[in-house]
Image (cartoon, rainbow, N blue to C red):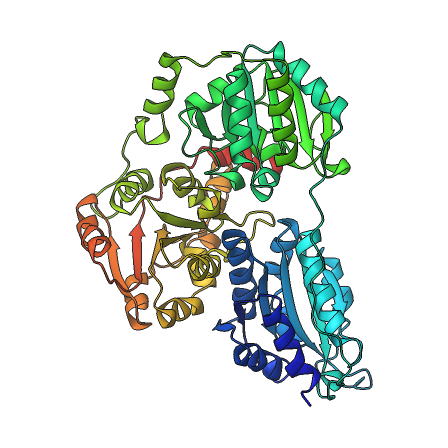
Length: 550
């Protein structure tokens, strides 16, 4: 008979798990091997923090459950930063974690793992014994998917080693619950408000992406002549629409900021309307009626006053609204016009003029980003780390849809971007993945460059290298603080990439990008580390607003 550890892998494979990220120790060795034996692919990271970030991004891009396998004790604690990011981002993620036997009270690995996990917003679950093991695994996977939160399944070593009884039930996943529909009276009230709006704006957030609400929201917009915008994490949701203003908030283009401020009605779907999306409340004008649609009552009005809150799934609510407006024969031009469509088309970030701050040794990060947007395939996945640089890829590099943009900023940690890009690349190997990093985040995640090389991923590791923690430089320099503690010697990332099995190119001037173009044109290309020595004097203007919260 198989042991509990062997049964866990078989159960998860039976539930449809295809890919597992992790780092193996004695506490998760047998479980991980059983997953591989049952047909799952195992992607070995070089650090558990990387493994959980990979699984997080994999889930965001694929729409499937992300799965991560780690050792007990330090194996689990090494995941905590990435686990916190996943919890704050409501990612459906299952972490398989070894755990010490109940009687092993003096083990070096001993830790109250349940409390650690719960403290960061994840859900602790446990395999209680051989008789319940199958049900325990199914319950953990089901909770992760239905509650959209990371679940950490503790697997005590003594329980893992016990044989699974013949009478154990077969794995059977629970039927998914239908998404909650809004109250008809609430839908009618939203339609009433839209009927009187002259300049409506639809603002979609993470909840709209998770609900797959892009198409019904565009239909709502078409019916009332609304313009469309997203929060940063929902970037790409309306990428095919000519009425798409792009990201709202600090990353908004000047035209987008101007138009959002003029809206007389803002209809937010699955967007929290936090300080990032509203530029600390300044972006939405005082004249605007604000309607917020969300699944969770506690999310409505938490960041700003709203005029109407609607409880419901973003897609279900949008579809109900389309039906309500059709029943009323409600069709309005709103503020859509041929002239406005042309302004939107010709006033993206790449169309804005700026004084190029590059020199013989440094390239302006805006010039770099605009050029790469043209050079790289349009069908791409973009994963952005945290740091001073992060606005440049978010603002200048287009993405084909929300599943092509991994923006792990819920916990604002530096160093998760490279691992996230690897997880995204595993989820979508059919398109190039761009990992946009600062030099600080790249050095934090350096071991995972070997992972990218070993997997043979179609990946560009784009490093905006200013040899500093640039956010701190620009935050504290105006007050005259000494900055030696956040400045470092330059790092040759291209050489490091080559040493680990990738190709490497250093870019100091626009002409140096010719090598990137040749690389991108190759049919079968290894991963590339692009060490861009960016002009350190270019200040990311969006950070001025961000610093207000520090």
